[in-house]
Structures are given as C-alpha cells and as structure tokens.
Image (tube, rainbow, N blue to C red):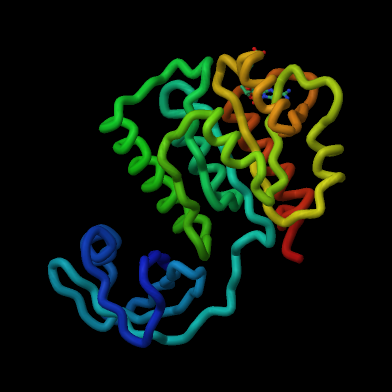
Length: 247
Ligand code: SAM
C-alpha cells in the first residue's frame, strides 16, 4: 500500500493538497476506493481510503489505525562531513532505510565541496526530499530530519555535553574499535561522525579529543566515506537497535 507522510496529526477525515496530492492522483494514478497508509508527525500510522480527488486535492477517510511501528528503539544521529558529488544523497537514502533519525551535513577542514547560503539551502531541501522518498519506500513511521549544514567543530562543541553516546569514526584510531565502544554504552541514543574523503585533520581529531569525544576504529581497512557511514549506522543498529531482526 502506498504511504504518505503528513505534517499534521491523523484524524477521521484528511484532505491532502500540494505535491503529495498531485503525486497520488496523477503520478500513482490512485483512484477513489484505493487504500493508502498515512503516517503523521508523531509516528502514528493509519490506513485510509480515498473518497474523492480534484486537480490539487485528495480526500481520505480513516479505515483504521495501524499498530505497526517500524521505528528502531534507538535514536541515531548521523553527522557526515560533506563528501564530493552526490555521495551524500546515497548516504541519506541508505541511512534512512537503516533507521537514522537525523542527518547533520558538516563542513570540515578537508571537505572539498563548499556551498554558498543559497546552494546549501537547496542541497538541504534535496537531501530531505531523498530522505522522505526513502522513508516512504522502506515504510518508516517517522521521517528522518536533514538539518542545515553546519561546521564540524560547532556541532562537536554543541554535542559534547549532550546526553548521547557520541563517537567519531577515525581511520587512524588504533586503541578502540566501534564494537568495544558500543559494549560500553547503556544509552538508547547515539551520534556518529564520519569524515569526508580527505578524512579528519589532526586539528579536528585533537579538538574532538579535548571535548572528550571518543574516536573509534571501523577496522584496519580505509573505507570510503559512504561505506563508513553505512557500516557505522548498521553496527549501532545491530548492536543496540533492531537490525538483528524483528524482536
Ligand atoms: N583520508 C583518509 C585516509 O586516506 O587515510 C581516509 C578518509 S575515509 C575515506 C573517510 C572517513 O570514513 C574517515 O574520515 C572516517 O570517518 C571513516 N573511516 C574510513 N575508514 C575508517 C576506519 N577504518 N575506521 C574508522 N573510520 C573510518
């Protein structure tokens, strides 16, 4: 069944307008009588039947709330230093499927890409659209939030005192691996930082260390940024979340 997300709360009768209405009526060619899954901002999910549509609106009536919850029991923040090309689109899509709750695009010393304000906003909207589409495809109850681009140091400083299990995946870390890091955590919310193709500068590693933010190894091989992002989220989800199968 098709799935749409509304930034409102579910109720008996809903009228969808804008791009979602157009998509349902004209792209997916939904018809009166078709059933659609609707998820709201609080992760509540309902099955609706289409009762009418016009050129720019679709009317839905509640069939029944769904007890499904496809959200992970852990909250994961993925902070990703901007990689080149369209890699962040790929990372956003995969991280959404893997259940992350927010994606923080970061600029850092070795980031090659630099966006002006207008381009940064456009990129954030594009990444959010990708997260929304991936969320629909994989049946999320909540859509991940793609935050505005910020600097690595500003974000690390902000998160250093937050009540979250935060680690930085560092390719030159030789003491602690992510498995050992995860074994020491007893929280249900995690944040992981991944560098760009050029990795973290020594100054950034020292800055994180000075804030008490642990760096962890993902093994002896140097992974591409997109591989590291997916591997780190998968490991967190497997060790603490729900990737080990339906529990
Ligand atoms: N410039 C680095 C080099 O050549 O040594 C490689 C950076 S790697 C392509 C991009 C990011 O992926 C790194 O900054 C790190 O966050 C993560 N990463 C890759 N391999 C890793 C590993 N073995 N352990 C921890 N993090 C890793």
